[in-house]
Amino acid sequence: MDIGAALLLLLDLVIGVAIGIAALLYSQNARGKNRRLQAENEAKAITDRAAEQAQNILKDAEDKSKSILDEAEQTTQRRRREFDREDERLQRRREDLDRRLERLEQREQNLNKRQSRMDKQQNDLQKLESQRMEELQRIAQMTVDEAKAELLAAVESESRSDMARIIRQVEAEAREEADARARDVISLAVQRLASEHVSEIAVSVVPLPSDEMKGRIIGRAGRNIRAFELATGVDVVVDDTPEAVTISSFDPVRREVAKRALAKLVLDGRIHPARIEKLVSDAKAEVEAAIREEGERAAYETGIPGLHPEVLKLVGRLKFRTSYGQNQHAHAIETAHIAGMIAAELGADVMVAKMGGLLHDLGKAIDHEVEGTHALIGADYAKRYGVPAKVVNCIASHHHEVEQEYVEAYIVEAADAISGARPGARRESLETYIKRVKMLEDIANSFDGVEQSYALQAGREVRILVRPDVVDDLSSLRLARDIARQIEETMQYPGQIKVQVIRETRAVDYAK
Image 1 (tube, rainbow, N blue to C red):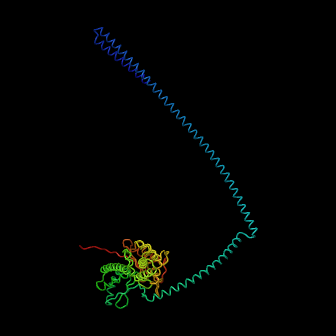
Image 2 (cartoon, rainbow, N blue to C red):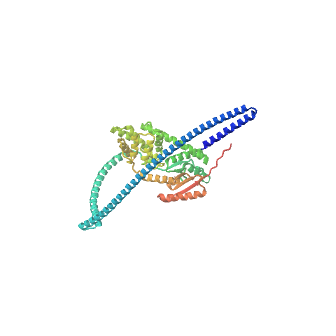
């Protein structure tokens, strides 16, 4: 409709233009009739052409409108067919869901019926079980509790007979083992007679040139001796012993460091806190060097090359450790030689046996620092530094804490027994004492703000150094009380233990 109106408007416009042109021609050519007629004819021709063009445009517009209408009709019909198909699909899906719902309802009904039958069967079974128990009690003429008591009595009687048989068997085996152990003890006693007996000590004595030196060691108001004890972690005993002082500590390395440092102080004569710290540091370096040298010497004497430096360092630390009545460094070397000779006689691996004998007590060098038995500690440490698996088994199994997998492990155990057992050795008392003083330091170190702790006076005192930036004066009192309470709750000890918390602030500057 819009196209038709546009065509009519166009036609009117063309007619108006033609009339205008005719009027213009008429006005310009008013004097000549022929010119007017000519203009009218031209105007008529233009009008006819315009009408013809308008007719053609209108026809084209109608054709195009009809084409658009046909296309719209086809689109509408296609959409209608799609909607019909979608409706049919939804209808089929709805019907399918209805059928599924019906099947589910049917299945639920079947399950309910089955559950009902099972409940009924369970009730019937319970009734039958009850009837069976009643019938059994009637036949046996006893209740369930009476039957249980009779059964337990029968089992107890049978168990007692088995226990008696096992006890007789164990007693026989114990007698046989006791005879074998007695023969071993006798043979070992013969070998022990030729070995040196060394007493276990926890103190060292430092000689003095005169008793006057004791006052200089103590210092004004005890300043020097306190600085020395704090730097070394030992207890210095200045008593009436003429021209000597005693150094006491459960840690032999600390005791050796303190002994060397104090000997140098006495020789030097300049005793004050700064000098004490310098000489203690030098003594620690000397002891570390001595430890390395002793480890290398042990490896050289036993002919065992290729050990890791850290392993040799622990072997050297055994120089300052005593156990079983003898120095552990000498014991390790002796065990290595004995194990090598036994392995050579039996055709075993001599190098493995000698290395196992040298390293079998390696854990004793660090058993104050690591939790566990010295055999397992030493085996783990040796394994960490590339010691062969056979040697690791020799170390771990020489006290039967793990299974002995190689013949060399049995050889090392025998060599350890030959070298280590000594008359009068107090292994249990020594280890108990060491564990007790070690536990004192562990308890103190477990609290926040503790920098160092030392067990002194054979475990009757624990001296604790705290960080002044973390623990203030009031907290020091509370810390001492808490540590004392923790010791009371977790340890058993004779007498009492003094807990001393030391808070020291140092200010350092340099004059330039």
